[in-house]
Image (cartoon, rainbow, N blue to C red; front, side, top):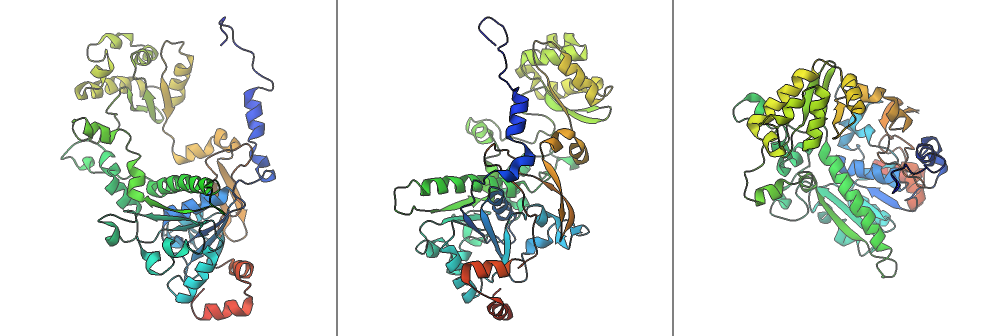
Length: 445
């Protein structure tokens, strides 16, 4: 708005048209890739966080080489047992994109020697073995760093690389990370004795994506620092990410709440400890989220409901009143009695038509199929149907971020174990078919 209260004229073309053209998903392949000068070695085996991280870097253009045991990564079997694509587990295939697939036995001395040669020219190495396992094989960071001081070495594990629990840690599992972090304790319905009060896991493998997100940020920071460190050739470093710690940063103010001397934060189910209204309510066609927790916004909810008198009810006058446990449930019941007589779209129309003061946040709780059917996400290329010569028709999620100049992209959804052995070993070692056959016969690749 201008100082006179008049609306400033919008530049031409309108923003919606400009940004749609700048991010046009159909033009992604015409643009450069941000990381296309990097070589990444994905040594994560049976570790989904490493699997996802390698895919993130591959989406940004890095040359990623997946190195898995000759028999294949056990993660290839992950997903529903009765649903696969070309014999591949759906979880593995969902994030197995944009890398060359080679096999290499890291437990064999000759396999370890080959990895050292690869690492000597790599920019990034990702591993998800128990703490110190790669070091015991002679291919950990402190053995590889003298061979390649520029190497950024990313180690993912449940407990991290040091600390009392690190030496005893076994394979990582998402649910262990959730439980150790405290996230599971906070998730679910409240109550001490009722069966539904049991801790509840987050519905996806959230730890893997948390690790990949934090580790990806750290990797890009390490690469940036490497190239401005002032040391000739640049200096890499080791990155240590714990899956449990990755989720601890998802607990927002929980630590400070305990620090202030209040009770330990408990499960709240559909409520929020700090604000009200901020909850889920039934609607004619399912469930919806509704929020309006400041006094003006709560007044807007009451106005939309046709119940302005609720703003004067002593139980609901202020945020502090509305968040008292005995009042929070009563207020939600008042809203639910109204919302269940309307569809989500009907309520949304009322919300959008309300002139204010105050703002109501409202949205339906989508089933995955509903989200998939919405034209908005398809226009943004959030999903894509891919025709693959090996796996057939695949419906895959696309990168979660857009970039106007160096956008991420999906190039190849995945390949069987060892599919690119010929290419990888010829490119980096000069090995031909006879040498590969000999290595294969001895269980090295």
